[in-house]
Image (cartoon, rainbow, N blue to C red):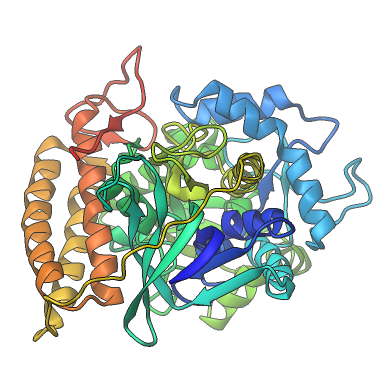
Length: 525
């Protein structure tokens, strides 16, 4: 049995930030499914929203967040995050993150603007902010003597007092599968952090990495935690449409710097959908693109930034410029083919302002959590900010608690299972799930489509549970099990909401109600 003061499941920005803030005082373990830098945080292009300019204000950033969130943002949580923006950026700068500088601004850094923002407030490192931040923090994590990184480990389930037959509501650690040896190990911890990201891989088309299978959300739900707002899945409007460009995102900042969305004949269409045109929030732009594609039978639409100079594009969007050029698309001369794709899970495990969940000693941070910040739609570049602020809040809470004695936990029992005879079942179920979630639970929904999805999810759950109970587990099986759980939560939440709001648009309930509240699901256990 491995033991840590704090165990962090996931190695994105929230997880690495928390590890570094605790490591001077505790023994920290990080488990990650692939390598340390394989999470969604590394893929973030645009940047981090924070009030850094004299022209900006806390009130304005809050207002933009609440407007994008379509009336469902928690005001206290939103204020807490926005007020801690500058402190979070200052901490990253102190760690050595190479943000793009601009000596002509009062902040000293180049600030860009994205959809839904009324001011320039996105601090960035060219167009690869996530990569720059993650690489900087990862170097510090790997150099720290108090941090142990376990790569190629996937969590199986949380070990709770209830699971152990104890009369407590605590998390005592986790069972984790070593992907290299196929051995399940027991990890005990005084504090366990879910920082596993979102569930984008539940959809056929997504900007997310392969690791985004909603593991933390599913584990917390099975353990007895409430989840909220799972119907609000953000579809990024502009994912590169090319057979060899798997999951490549065209940053919101391209539209922020003047990119125009066009039909194949060159006609601009966004002004007819929203007065904010290309700078409308993501849900509006994604629905507009979806509408135009379905109306005209298009495979994609086009994002044109060719009016900008080559020098401008190479300076501000070097990654996008180079990637498109490698695929034969010169963005300085021709528009970029784009389609919407599942991008961000706005709901998740309910957590308070200290990132605490319903189970004692279990925390949720980042995209895994529902903090109340995003409401019915996430404002661009608020996600990395949320990771930083709540990682700091969790660290403060953990360091303020007295040490606890760790229990000796039972080993994983696989005495009653055998080797699976047909692994193809997992691959078939995975493909089926992602297909019908895209078809029935996508950008535009109906009750009938949702009910069809719900029926198929139940059949898949029964099949997967039987497989899980009788055969040795594998990473693919665990991810499929978690994805199906997330699919169930998304559909249940969507069926509960009898209106259209933010990212949830229903043809059967197109109106937006005058009063609304978060969708909260409570486990039966």
